[in-house]
Image (cartoon, rainbow, N blue to C red):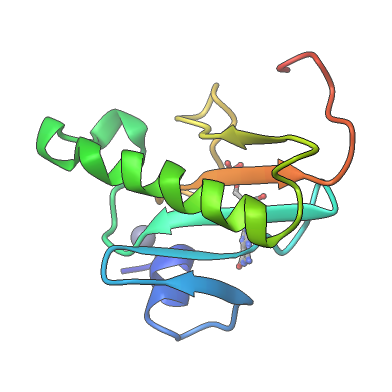
Length: 113
Ligand code: 5GP
Ligand code: ZN
């Protein structure tokens, strides 16, 4: 499949992977928008939040839990951070493989775009 994040999961293109289990992997964004900018993704190819089935919804809860743990490890938990999932074209999603952004380490804008 021609999906950049599936290729990262498969090890076909390099990434700075900082977490991996049987369902979820996390790596640093190639174009960071904050001092800490991680992407937390399911290993399975789910195109977007809009494609998530009810049976898969616990995966997003796991992604949030892992993001919270990574925020502690990256030292941004106390100062605060933002988790974002863009969905679809108007939602600003560019990579069609479900992913959550973790942004922290600077004061983020109060506006949401
Ligand atoms: P989106 O706009 O789809 O929510 O965010 C996609 C994110 O993936 C962007 O922040 C972009 O910098 C990141 N990204 C795109 N291609 C790659 C890649 O090959 N490696 C890494 N590490 N990040 C990528
Ligand atoms: Zn994919």
